[in-house]
Image 1 (tube, rainbow, N blue to C red):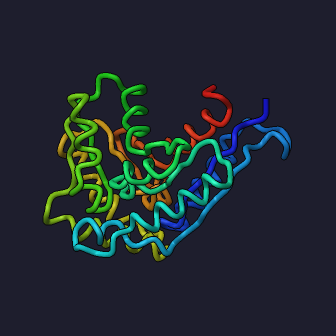
Image 2: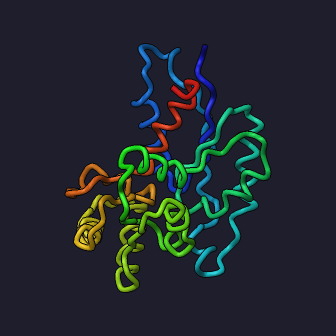
Length: 230
C-alpha cells in the first residue's frame, strides 16, 4: 500500500514549515524516492498574526485560515498538519470548514508526553504569549492532572522578543536558554517547546529535563498516519 497524502498548512512561520517538511522526510523509512510520502504544502505567510488577534484585537485570521485549508482539501489530501501552535486557538473553526481531518498539534504533544512519561505531573511551557494566554496547553494538560508552568508576566516580553528574533532567522539561544533554566528551577519535569520557531534551536538547548519539541512530535505523527498508523 502506498502512503497516504498529507497536506501542510505552513507559513506560520516559513522556517518552521521547512523544518517540519525536512523532519517528515528524515523520519520516513524510505529506500528510494517512490517510497516517500506524497506531501502538498500551502505555505501562506500572509495569514494575519495569531498572537495579535488573540491579545491585541488584531485582524481575524480565521477567513484566511479557512481558505487555505479548503485549498488543501481540494488537492485531495488525507490529513492536514499545521506546524504552528498558536493557530490551534482556531482549530474548531478550521475543522468545521472541511471534511478532511486536521491533526491537532496540542493534543498530539500532550499524548506524546503521556505516552513517554505517564507519571509526569509538572511541565514547563515556552511559547508565544497567544498560546500561553489562550490556555491551549493548560486546559489540555489539566484534564490529565498535569500542572503547567509558564514564564511569568515579567518574563513575557523577553520570551515574545526571542521568538520574534527567531522569525528574523536569528540563532541566538541565550534568552530561551535562560527562560528554560528558570522553568527547571521551578521544578518542572519536562519542557514543551510550544512554538514551532523554538524547534529551530531545540538541539542547541542544554537542559536536565526532557524537551517536548512540537515539530518533532508532529512530524513523527505525520509519518505514522501516512503509513496507516504504524
